[in-house]
Image (tube, rainbow, N blue to C red):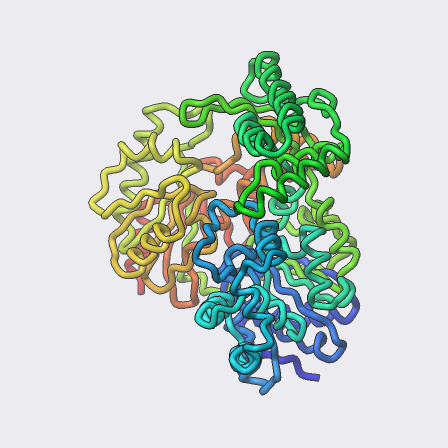
Amino acid sequence: MKDFFPYETYRAGQDSFVKVVRTAITHKKDVLAQVPTGVGKTAAVLSPALKYAIEHKKKIIFLTSKHTHHKIAVETLRDIKEKNDLDLKVADFIGKVHMCGRNDIDPRKATNFPDFCKHLIENQECEYYENFHDKNRFFQNKNLFDKLKNNILNVEEVVEWCKNEKVCPYEATNMLAKESNVIIADYFHILDSSIRETFLKKIKKELKDCIIIWDEAHNVAGRSMDLMSSSTNNQSLRYAMLEAEKLDEKIMNDIEKLRNKIEKMSEKYKKDETIISKEEFGSYSSAFIDKLHSLADTILEEKQRSYLKSLANFLSSWNIEGTEYVRIFRKTIKKGKEIFTLEKNCLDPSLTLQDVIGGAHSNIFMSGTLYPLEMFEDIFGLELPLKVEYPNPFPKKNRMHLTVPGVSTKFTERSEEMYNKIGKYATNIIELIPGNKILFFPSYNMIDKIKPYLELTDNVIIEEPGMTKYKKEAILDKLRNSRNNTLLAVSAGSFGESINLEGDALSGVIIIGIPFAKFDIMSKELVRYYEGKFGKGQDYGYNIPAFMKVLQNAGRCIRSEHDRGVIIYLDERFAWSMYSKYFPRDTMPQSGGSSLDIEDFFSKK
């Protein structure tokens, strides 16, 4: 039967991807797909998946890490519903704290919000929760619930509608999820085993009855490892002591002993970071950890955060052994204070993914930068997935990729002379590009080093560390509404991926240097681990993650078939064979470009 495709015609590659998804789901296979912007991967994956799910009583769970991608999925499902006249129901989840309708909740401080929320509910202190379940409000609530069920809404719309009626948006979305064909959610709803268990129980489905779609799947490995990692430090232990002081003096003294252990490590280890063994900090009984949890619950009856809860979670994680982890003692200075941190970091994303990959009906991993596919097959722990790679669908005449020789941000090449040279090269290139430009640097420090040598007539905007989403949106609005701006940004920062500047809002991207991670202990351990497991440590642990950032940065330019722009790689290493192999074939830059190439490109319409 025909898939629920919402549009009259297929784009280049879209028909093929529809068939791949249909085949994979029919045969309970997994998919790894590199699908660039412009192919229309959201419609291509949802239309065959939805057809199968409805016919076989399966649930589609569409996972994505960005709120903007939630909206794209919602809009696509609206189109599918309208085109096919379907009785289609959709539930859209984000983090519980961001769905709360109360005005007294600060997401920045509500580290332990689920536990805080639980206590409010148990003590009947949440008006929004009580109103949702209040039978005396039946007709008022029914009117709201009918509107929610009969419309496909993004989570922000659900929150607004529910807040207006003083009804809990999270509970309302849970109600929708039980009846929904598609659930849109964040990765952690499925990656975190405890959240996944609760989540599946609420929607009354087993994992085997779920088709999982992983959007922007290049982010999955990092999120998976983060979930299996944990840390604590001398400052958070001090705050935990202050919490315990009011509740249990013995526990307070026990925590003080933990803090003293960390302080002694700071005397023993002189380096900024050191690998340590589990035994150096010790093992901790389940009775002690349970006591910390119990005291934390008391704190969370009044507050949105508990340091005792964080400590309990850390100690539970610290007790787990395995070669897939590295334990690090780290010294830093923050606001003039010495911070001594214990970290337990996961090196293997398959630890988190294995139950989902083994248990779900199918997993569809898709991204525009899922390259090379073989690496993700290895590190995700997939067995014989269907692997597909699609070329950039936009006209080649509308885009130009150039590498510029003679400069480099390689550590051994760095000097004031080199910064001056890079600044002059970048200035000349910027003058040749009409409209807005983004310069991506490997770090904030590199911006500071090169900025003095940029002589720009443009309005210069500089990304700041820890930028709020409101400030980010203000900058994007400026780029959309005016021209001749140059944004200095960081490759792994707020503007490096998942921003859309279509039309003539962005004419050029200049990538200055290769954004390799600092080759610290964590990087070295990743290289060591992947070398031992796959024989590809330098590639998987260091080189490819840097080039994924490069490809994401390059992808900010040319967001539609009508866009025109240039991507300049300002570092001679991009042309070296040892690095150029990391570019997909259709985005391989021309080596040795000149100003004449750029002038010629923009002179043609």
